[in-house]
Length: 361
Image (tube, rainbow, N blue to C red; front, top):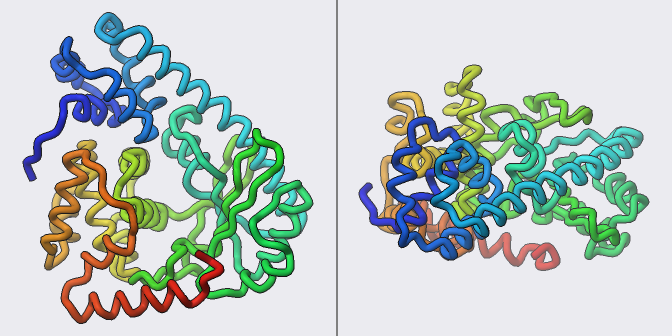
């Protein structure tokens, strides 16, 4: 799929790959005197790539004279700011987990700080807006009690929370702390906040296949390889692959896991079972096109949907051209339905889910 893209966006994508290898000469070609540095820095910022750009460019010391000093300092500052914030976040997480363990509350961590440490291998490369934790629905009342004892508050009173935590459509709860240095904690009981969307995620299977990890001395669990990749694909589609860091997460995960062997058969079975094969296809296709993610021969062909609508093709083209895509996962998923009947059924379930419990929206 051939598309035209600004040289600043091309430069940003080269930096986002991180494993640049022989890309030095290509980057030098892009670093022309007329490069719009203000545009480049802003695009790196809104795509949450400033720390990654900084570390990528460090590999090419010969480029220093071609990059304005102010740009280099902005990139450096972002990296060390992210590093410091994530160190503080880790201490915050350790305190939460130790209190959960005291109450026998099993926890799975995903996104943000987990990706930075275990997938990127550098806690300064991947920022986190909050701490995402998956718990069992039966533990929600205990979770709420523990977090409130630790000084966290939510938008719900205790009494109202007891009603909401048994709602079918309310699957996540965001907690804030009066200490402004502490980041919010997002508690999940399901991997989609909109269960009317067309998929059949088996949460018990996710719990059963969760893998133990050590995150800077904190003993935790995270998703299996296949569940993590499928979740990141679904999450990226939900946000229309914006910001670009969402695609970098997928690229980094594959590069790290493939070096030790990736369970591709398990992935394909899980994608088919959950009905999320289109999301997985989009993620792998775009990652290979934008970040040159190496994929096994024939994988994309096996995942290619039998029908891709004009809407979907336009959506993919827009992402490839580094253009902004409207937000709203519902519209993206609507375009993924294969025929009029499926689209009408999707709208029916979406509306039913939307108004099934207004308090959760």
